[in-house]
Amino acid sequence: MDFSLIETMRWQPDEGFLRLDQHLRRLSRSADALGFRQPVDAKGKLSESVSGDRPLRVRLVMTYRGKIDVTTTPFEPEPEEKIWRLRIAKTRLKSDDNLFRHKTSRRDPYEAARAEYAKAEADEVLLLNERDEVCEGTITNLFAETAEGMLLTPPLASGLLPGILRAELIRERKARSEVLKLQDLKYRKLFVGNSLRGLIPAELIDEAD
Image 1 (cartoon, rainbow, N blue to C red):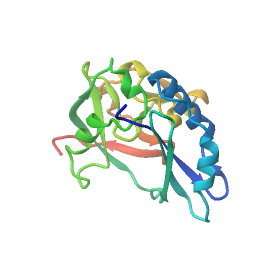
Image 2 (image 1 turned 30 degrees about the horizontal axis):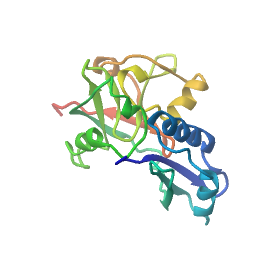
Image 3 (image 1 turned 135 degrees about the vertical axis):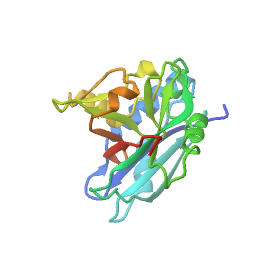
Image 4 (image 1 turned 90 degrees about the vertical axis):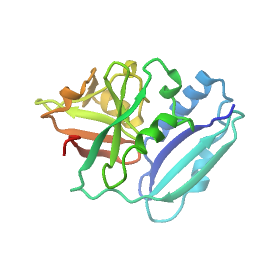
């Protein structure tokens, strides 16, 4: 196969890998679903790759044959006061394309969406599906807060990656899945997030701005 499975996670000197078991479970499920060999000693290979006293961004890439490659780079968290600016992509996701339910190196729609805006114009770009439902960002899941403090996040049926942080928030009953249209995001506190970065406050930039 001409694509690989990917897991990106964070390693903290004092905590180790964040949500490691969830990442490895997703990797194994995707391998099974897509006909890849199961990973062998992924946990050991990850452990060998980390050291030092600074947080690391750790990227695991696994080929169809189960070969694992791990790379690390220093991780710098966003300043607490940072609010990510969100824009809407013209590029669409197909809700019935099951490949994008798995984190792989096939990222054409995400890369096309990100390329629609310069970094100075948007910190993250959101994609919709063919029904005008909000799906996800290019590297994050989206969350819209209700008046009661519950986080609403698009359902997998809209066509998106089941993010590790998203799943954790749903499991902890801090979030629930619900179909979201653009009008549902107005007047609501927004967040984007993933397992590497956690939840980041965000605002949707009107195209007229």
